[in-house]
Amino acid sequence: MPPTGVVSDMDLNRIAKRIHNVSPRPIRLTFADGETGVFHFSSTEFFQTDFQGEATREGDDADYRVTTTEEGAGVVVGRKGPDDEGWSLVGEVVDAEAVES
View 1 (tube, one colour):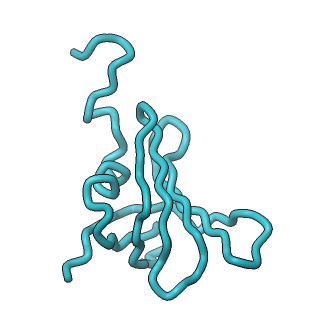
View 2 (cartoon, rainbow, N blue to C red):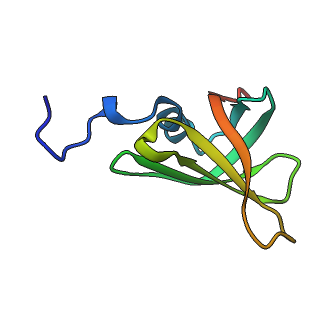
View 3 (tube, rainbow, N blue to C red):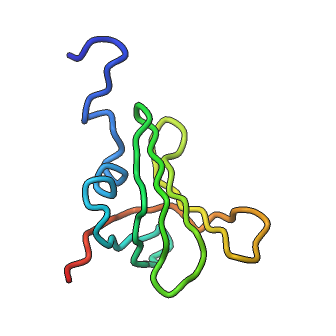
């Protein structure tokens, strides 16, 4: 058992961990509603167990932010288009896989 305050790999959200490990290669994200998209991450990082990534999506000129939910239980994606004043929720990610070239 790791010492108190030490984060182990077991504590990290599995989808966030996959995104972090695959990036900067393209990643296909699948959302809870069945929608999919190919994302290109410019950055990914963990703060203890909290995850955050910045990305673009193929076929869209918006910015995307990917984060874990409270307690790291899920991964959600926000979108901000060039003419948007704020972020809107795209959905919850249920799968992430590397895009084979």
